Image (cartoon, rainbow, N blue to C red; front, top):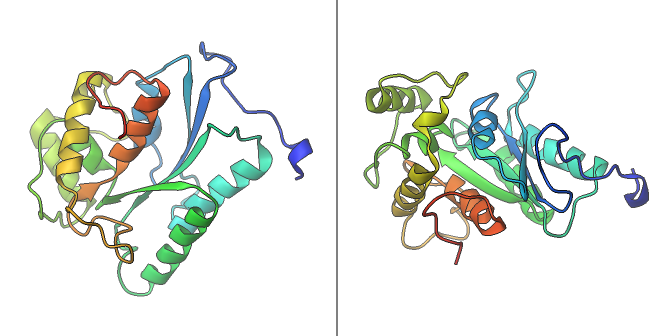
Length: 221
């Protein structure tokens, strides 16, 4: 599809979003949690369009391909951003790793931004409620689920509850996620956190800078 034939930016009509709003397109491995989470923070000048996984197409390559297809179909403004939210899961091991790195490089070459979580996006949700020790390693996503249930008393990722993720807690999650980052990130191996960590905070900082009202979240320096 040529530049002139691309469809205009798909801002929603059922919620009050201004026509000059910033558009953040977020493709995820997850099928439901990120889309629910970002819907909890509506803002007239910022619209987050989440491209969740459907039909089991959750590999890093599929996530990046969704961004490519979206950018090819719609007009993307200079101030808009495209993000890939990826999990380390099993993608950083064995024969899966080269495909992951190829997808990350493709995203980088196209100017897309990447926020990886180890082991999964749910760690970002956990950080709203409690800190995680630097260097800690969760065995898998189920271990994160158990930690959230212990902190909240319940957790169903298909039915997130807004009161578990109030805006004022987002600032805590950002600070806790930053604390899990090493002082120096190696350019070759620093695509993802080597132990428990999540770089979703980078997206949150960009949303805050664009005007989304996360109470107490500092602007990205």
